[in-house]
Length: 278
Image 1 (cartoon, rainbow, N blue to C red):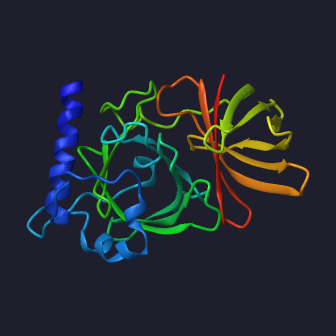
Image 2 (cartoon, rainbow, N blue to C red):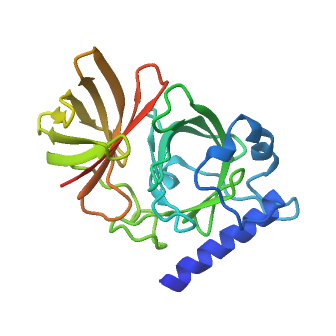
């Protein structure tokens, strides 16, 4: 299995070198290099590779839903993809790295020619009002087990239900429901602020921070998504700050022992990530 994984990575990197015309040796730590200035580079690399190669089969939403992880260069980086519309014609994705430098929220659209068009926003954590536009283009390779992001030269592998970044059937790697019910503890703001949260069975979310802020909100399941939707208010005595986003199982394992909350405020001007654990 490990040999197969290595083979997938090298195959995808070779494809990147062919389609992007560059070296894949210096992969970026996140999608910071795919902002407005990368739009031309994203559109230049067609999903099928060079003109002499056979075009990739058309993508479908079912082949994209679930969890994807980057085994190199930063194994903590993960991408979760779920439906943004009832007919799954539009997909939503969130990307978070283990170093917690930034949060990325994306919309994915399968175009008529089979290309995967990706656009959205990247928020550097702790920097309000500093969001950056993200534009990408993607293609699935190796029997749909590897997702290549062509502009940023990144390779993501489908994560199986048990948490292993190993090839398997699409059905095996399909997103499992996230069950956050119970008590959680964690932190945000680079670990400086501690939080205790509780997800109740009826959808209520309550908690408090070490700085005296009250937390209240709601959570709901989203069908076919590897996350639950979360909306909460943070009341620190100077007015209520509202955030909305997702809670998803961390990439490190299948059991819900780690639960990152990734959220943006109502004005989409800043992001907040809480890292929670049982």
